[in-house]
Image 1 (cartoon, rainbow, N blue to C red):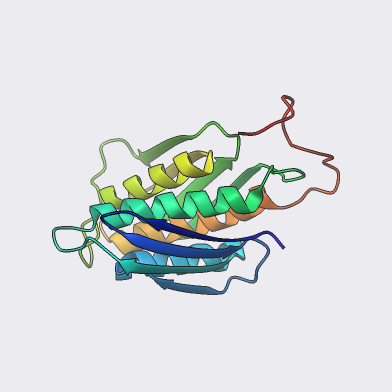
Image 2 (tube, rainbow, N blue to C red; image 1 turned 30 degrees about the vertical axis):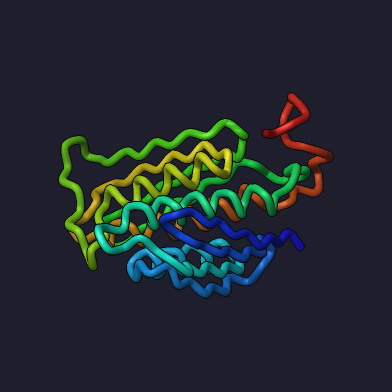
Length: 201
């Protein structure tokens, strides 16, 4: 069982995460950001990850920026540590998930070389409207922090994003869960670390 318990304490936040990569999709999320809690529940469910996140202290008085970003940091770190040397994993995953007119295409590569790219199509389309105090830019910051800490190439392409933030981000988090599930699965044909270099940082 690839499991990990991780705590991250700063002057701004205190966050504890418990992860079982080979779980059944059970989630218990209490970050202090209700909208993000729901998105992370969807992520865990569709990724079959058992995930518990508890924010003991959160810097939410001014805005949610610090807590939102720190949650991405913690989630990336707990996945990276639970994966260990990454021996045998498929490493690359892709998922496409629709919701009404929106389609989220998510591609991941746990390469050790972090990068994040989010593309909205058609070009020039408007960003979704903030909901429950959560803005689209917060999701971008969350994904960027997650990718950096996990050491993951994360590309997200959103087709026909809605003005409804929930309808736009829900398929993204579902697709991210499915893509990361595929990438972290053990391939019985793969002997050792999935890199011609023989190591993934």
